Amino acid sequence: MSNTLRIRTMETAYKEIKEMDPGTAITKWAIRKAVTEGFVPSRRVGSKYVFNLDALLDYFNVRA
Image 1 (cartoon, helix red, strand yellow):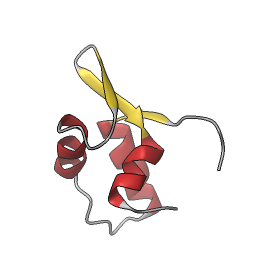
Image 2 (tube, helix red, strand yellow):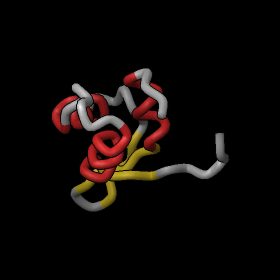
Image 3 (cartoon, one colour):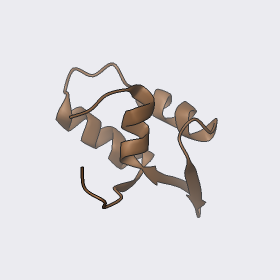
Image 4 (tube, one colour):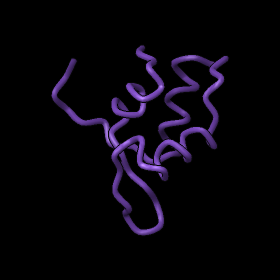
């Protein structure tokens, strides 16, 4: 695993997950809930949330 943080928005994280697994059951809404309810550490930048993609994948317990 690289030490580089993969900081993403909800939209870009969803697109990357879909690329990894086109049949994924993870939805944009599920990502939004995980981030906004604090299960995935995040920061607000303007009107968007940004977070580490690896933390999101850890939360859903999925790895490429």
